[in-house]
Image (tube, rainbow, N blue to C red; front, side, top):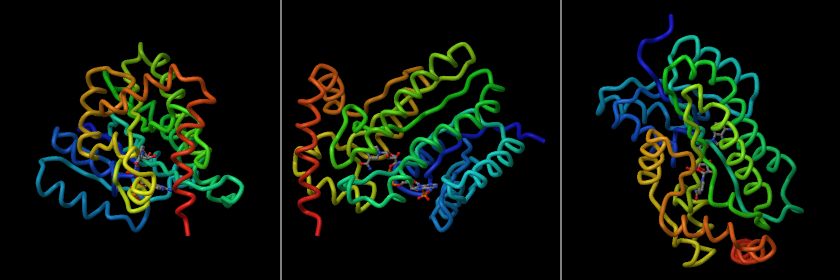
Length: 266
Ligand SMILES: NC(=O)c1ccc[n+]([C@@H]2O[C@H](COP(=O)([O-])OP(=O)(O)OC[C@H]3O[C@@H](n4cnc5c(N)ncnc54)[C@H](OP(=O)(O)O)[C@@H]3O)[C@@H](O)[C@H]2O)c1
């Protein structure tokens, strides 16, 4: 029997921005299904959230890049829970020369950022559209504004997320599904992301926003029907600026800053 309660599915919910989405949902009285990697802090977070807020939080631990695990877990979830909100947050990136990046690392970015987001959406849409109104948030990045050397696959994957989301938004408009894409700027979510920002220098931290700010803004704007969400004034300025700059100029400008991270690598 499917639950009467409605649930929000959050991927990568055990840390960083995903954890902030779980809290933002609970604060709005939304029940949550957290999807995290085995060994994550998800269950502890779920217990803490349920001790504070009158919501139900369920935890599913599996690797999103494992197609069989993804399909079987989502089947179990959709048979049991009424899903009216999906937040595709899990994603990974990094800075390295493409030539020297191991094949497995490149494949993992493509699997998690592109394939998982697409499959999650495809597998949960039948459940989402059973509700009169439902919502999808896909997390891109300001890295999607332009191609970037020494990141190459990550910005391309986030560009895919943006294009996929906006195409789907048009297709789903008459089915009651609001699809939004969020382009966060830098976030100090983990030591890797923080270290990279520090190495890029002052300029890279200008668009810095907290996970709480981004998660709350993303949910509020999505509920209000906004499809393109760029958190922070500085990041919004860059969003419009990169639309007008010639591609060669913007790739050169941003790649020069990013290259500093490589020069600092041991
Ligand atoms: N940090 C930034 O500066 C920044 C900027 C712009 C956009 N973003 C985007 O924002 C999103 C969240 O970033 P973040 O910095 O908060 O991430 P993070 O701290 O690096 O955490 C990544 C999350 O992805 C999940 N994850 C990774 N591999 C997974 C897998 N195979 N299966 C299931 N879950 C997996 C992990 O979930 P669990 O911990 O729950 O296992 C982890 O919470 C990503 O899409 C990222 O690209 C980040």
